Length: 141
Image (cartoon, rainbow, N blue to C red; front, side):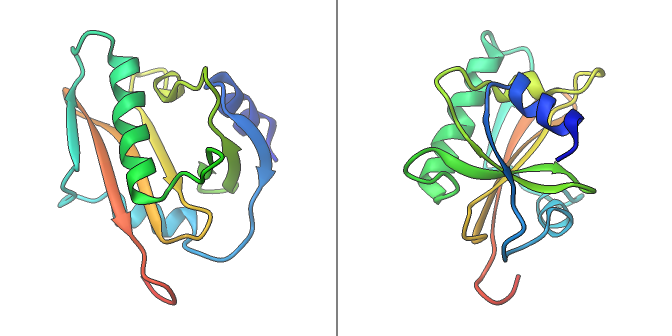
């Protein structure tokens, strides 16, 4: 695994378990399905919300748990990058998705269930953070 990818995940206090090369939609396919012009967010959080990092973590965690993206032990797949694919990680008590924002303040975090059936992402869109969800049907998209 590329050291920059590992460092970014560890900086968000995610426990990095290693690369994932199993079945299911690729990072590119997940990205195409959740990040497009007509995407409708499941939830919007204004960027100027007090305690924005906590709000993003809470909103994403609730949606990811309810949709089955998070395993019972807190494991899931996260997009390391389009080039490096999925990385298996586990949430910790200190995990902070907001700390994965780029230098320009944008945040893009795409997570997938181990089975590949659900994706739950966070993206900054203008003055809001969006929580996006997508379902992948078995044997197709």
